[in-house]
Image 1 (cartoon, rainbow, N blue to C red):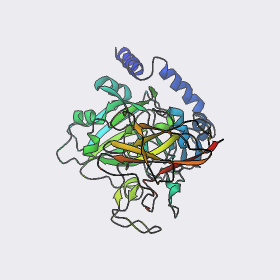
Image 2: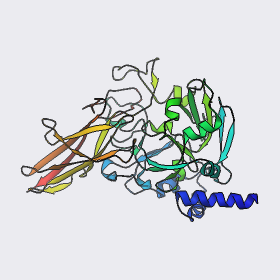
Image 3: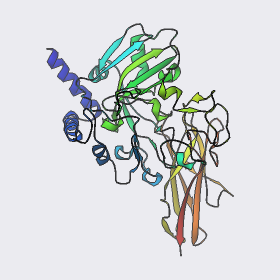
Image 4: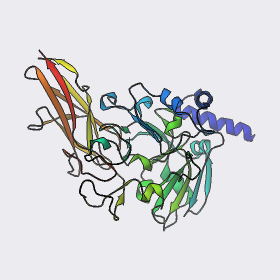
Length: 404
């Protein structure tokens, strides 16, 4: 009887995220990913790279990081093979059939769920949400900030996520009145045994946001291994490190978690500092992304015919709030024209903007984009420098050649 009930739960789960063949496909990928070159219980770098498009630019291998340039992001929904990769440690091989999520700490009832239990006991949701590494665009800073050399337009993506609301799981556990933060711990192993576990915490207000998920699906299929299979947090709009991958434990705390990924990494100065200075002691943890936009078409140095209209297209987003408008300049910022802004795919999804430009004649034309949010914040010409190179959101520039 128990075996029959477990099988039914799995069928329901798979039908909701990817169709009846999903688990078999994941099992096949497991076998392929367990390459001899990878440490036991982890996935090889080669197997991860094979699942990405050739346009993916790999910035480092330890940790493994990679992203596509802006012109490879010309999609309303980011395809899985174009989603950026940002590991802190190694990519684990986890069996969905034995994996469990524990909920502990300041709760009335400590809980433990399999992935299938979550699908069975809570309402499943699908939403589009923006994730972006805190260091996205780091190479734009001068002097060079420390950390992974992300491209000025690399390290972000906006796919569809499927799972259950973190808030629903916390309510089932019964959060105590003094609860202030929720910490997620991932199962990614370090190359050495002494590596600090990847643990980040988010304020209770963000944990209870209806769009903060415990996710098992991306773009209608089970999470790829490198993106957190079988479970991850999705905290849309905030720095990607808040969205713990390979999630196995949630701990409800009365204060922010104390650890490497809260107190040493992912911090910014409370006030602006002189470029080149060290992190001040009163730095704060990174949270929501500031307003930002990128041009996704045309590609850099594309060739256009004189007399033909050039369709400039891009994506704009903000960590909290909404994008109010986007403007495009074709004359180095002397004049700006308002772009047409499409409806968003969700509260935390990026928005497509378009602008039609008719060049006056042949020559080289540089397009720039800037966005505003509904709180009056504008995308700057140059981002404020900080020691770890976070929150790069300066104007994006794309030049094209108009031929006679």
